[in-house]
Image 1 (cartoon, rainbow, N blue to C red):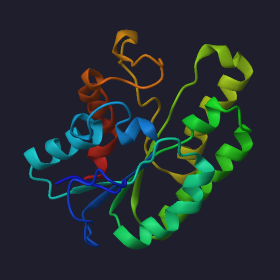
Image 2: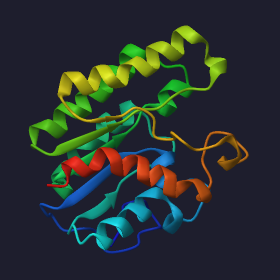
Image 3: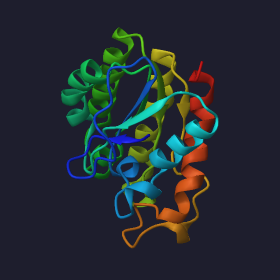
Length: 198
């Protein structure tokens, strides 16, 4: 049963504090922007977890427009509320699209990872890429953050959330994937998540 913490689109009552919660902490790419929540990759992931009788419950706290700084300010309360066994961290894209300092983005993501580590939750870090018009130096700086953070905090990394999603499966803004692409995204996340489902 998927629990979505976004106002007005909750699919179930708030999840109780449980050792088998998976907290998805992301932005619009994980919040189901422009599609039905039931079609989004977190919802499809819950279906897959139920199919395998894993016992894990998804708690999706993703917010469209969220930044790494915003996430840094929110994470402690959510960790206390849901006590997740696993956290899927998918933030940084909005920071990059706004041209924020990569040093600041990396520092904010590192603080989030540190807070997750303090409660001994297992973590999967999700990387992103920027459109080519942001220029090679900035794009390189942005993308290099994710493997560096994964190595520093010793967490598994999915280098690119949208790997394998073709151009025709994006919405009109060319940033957000359509419903058709969500199974592929779910499979991408499942690759990095599976080793954590112990």
